[in-house]
Length: 109
Image (cartoon, rainbow, N blue to C red):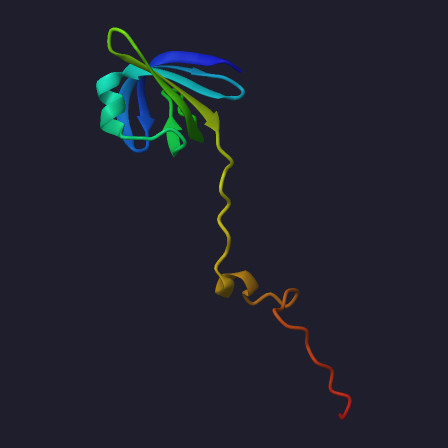
């Protein structure tokens, strides 16, 4: 499942040029130290990353290591995907099978 390459990588909505390697456990990026500073992401941040292959996924920034002359290695681990929960008014809807309260039986009729 390893994918690697170079090109425009979108990190938290910002497009930068980076070398990327995708692993089963996460993602490793090499980008310029200036780009890393411009992103302003702390270690532990949850970010959305889209590589040139078109795969868009959520990651946690695990580490960021400066390497001479002016590169930054960033390792990210996969973050769980958030599921959108329905708003209570949409949750019950008009379905006759799902009701918020049980129907009371009227024994007087």
